[in-house]
Image (cartoon, rainbow, N blue to C red; front, side):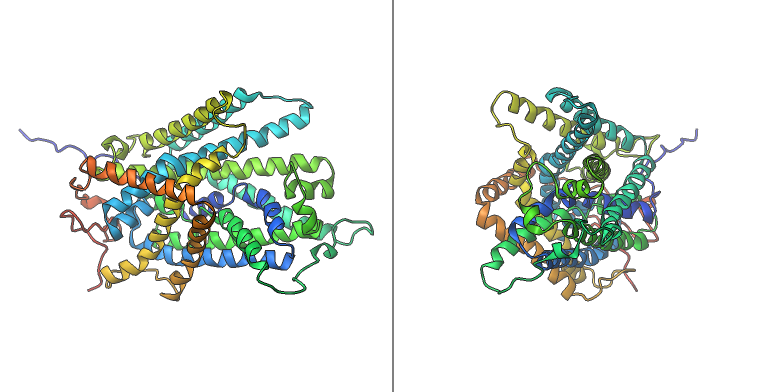
Amino acid sequence: MTTTPNPSPPGLTRVLGPLTATAIVVGTIIGSGVFKKPATIAQSVDESGLVAIVWVVAGLLVLCGALAYAEIAVLFPKTGGNYVFLREGYGRLFGFLWCWVDFWIIRSGSLAALATIFTESLHDILESYAGREVLGFWAQRGVTVGVLLGLGLVNIRGVRWGGGLQVVVTLVKVVSLVGIAVFPFYLLGRAADSTVTTANLDPVWPLAWSAGILPGLGSAFLGVLWAYHGWQNVAPIAGEVRDPQRNLPIALVGGTLLVVALYLGVNLAYYLTMPGEEMAELEGTTVAAASALRWIGPVGKVVVAGAIVLSVFGSLNGNMMVGPRQLFAMGEDGLAPRWLGRVHPQYRTPAASIALLAVWSSLLVVGVAVLTQTGVLAASKSHFDTFTDFAMFGAVLFETLAVVSIFRFRALLPNADRPYRCPGYPVIPALYVLLPGFILYYMFQSQLVEVIAGTCFVALGALVFYSFGLDQRKRPALPDADTFDGAKPDGGRREGVTDRPHRKP
């Protein structure tokens, strides 16, 4: 009697092209920061020229990171992103700790915060039409949870569904930002009393340079960096990107360049519309809304609220796509429950991981709402920002380790086949270190409590890792079917696993 071998379990499929991969990068970087940060930056820096330099310098440093990160992603084009890079470069503990911080607080907290901003902006639009409050406190929480669970279901249904939605929303987002950047030039000089004028750019440079300018530049630089955060988000889904050796560098570098150009154009539009001193004094509104009010009247507030809704929605969907892939990779490795590493037999997505992240993010929304209503937390829109601050130290640390792992992999795998190599190595990745170095310095200076709390949370993760014997758990060998162009995408080296990136003879 012939025994039929059991069929291999379904795996993730490479169906995402360069457009979708780039849309993930652009869509997850651009959230609400480009609408809300300029006023804060104007409070720190008076001169429009210095503001432009801050945006450019931060963008160039992020670009340095993208150029280096693309080489690592091409070397390990496997689902998991930073989890895989940290595991292969520094050991399984580092990969586990990154996912520990990312899942419990950073990713879930970001999703909860973005969904809350989405609902609040949507409510502003409805309220402007109705002339009264449309949704009460708990109704808004219900919409927020519904958005999170709905996006979870869309991404469970198929990576093409989530990717297609990301492309559409990102394209609309880019078009809206291009419109904001271009429209003031249409108005420039069309009427004698036009508020759009190059005179609003003054002062461009400080009349006298002094050391007192540096603290303001530092504060502005930090605000700009947060607006660029999220550029690494295509890496976790690399296992579902077609021709990753080509498409991952296109997405990382091309997407980052596009965002830098959009940010510069939009901020120039703001400064053509109103001087920096007026931006700094705005309360209860964004620079974008105040600018649009001057361009097209009261309808401008609704238009900007709609742009924010679309922008935040795109960032939400992008994070819902990529976040669960790290849980999935951990489940495959046995560092998380095995069921998180399973692929849905029909939809070919990590359905369990997506559902878990969507549910946990929803519980954070409900939990913060309950604490607010019972008076444990003061009513404020910054709860999620405060919450994530306690783990941001660990996030910045591990994200930086992922980028600088390029040095380690050049040493560990000197002969590995690298279809893409970071230009300007080792200078380019070394320059990137300036960016997280500044953030960590600022945190130690002004957020020491958050740094200590974040360190304790990371230490708790290490305790869990060793208490449950995860350091002793063996990684399963990858099946031959999981190769790509003759190279094992995992590149594992530990616990007896010998699959490595293909080496040149």
